[in-house]
Image (cartoon, rainbow, N blue to C red; front, side, top):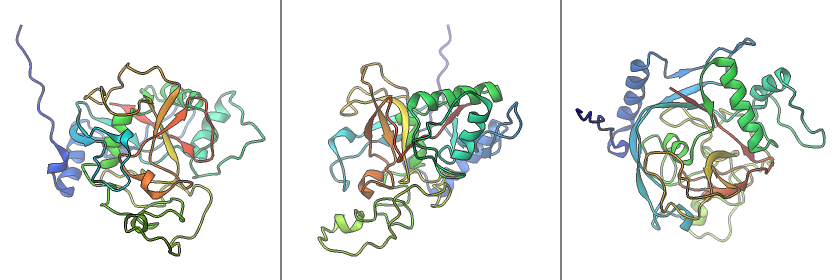
Length: 292
């Protein structure tokens, strides 16, 4: 039998921003899809907008030199995403989820706070998020799901190795975080400072902050985003192909991205936080993946 070698995927941190964007465009051309697209649904209208994410290799996690580093982000390791996929340009919004609510028997608990219009949907469980992706799959004829932790971080970084996709520091211009716990001031060990951000104790509408090179908004801050990866206290024994390992049976899952309620250090690309599988909160949301 002839061995067929898999074409080598590029190591993204070696590419320039222009080359990162070109790689996305090249991949979308090969798939005969726009860089950003939405699938049509049977009930009418379209599913949430997606961005093409090309295959490639990156470094996941962080080392002790990165300010804000936690041991849970160790060890930093190479990860290879062999197949392109599409991911939501934004977290799923209340507007998106209302289409699902109206078409199914899913009911909102009246005692809970609820998002509006283009705010990230909140106060739903991981099981509800999975019901939504199953419904999207039925509506479009495509396969929708939640991202793995590796896929999420790969898409969020968009070829970068820095703490954030835009560099080594952050402000409220780029991230919606707890304004009393900024990044640069903490990095400089300033004990006293005036917050430079207007305090806003809730999530803001999606698309409010600058996108990364692949067109994804609010991968830093606003709301934590669930992944399908079960929690482990480090990246030891993690699969190196972007898939989930089967070494954990925890009821805790990895969430990524930080939130309006948390310090800016938790919005870094490598940052991770464990949340229960049945947890609901006003700073918890999700982003969808569509297989290609």
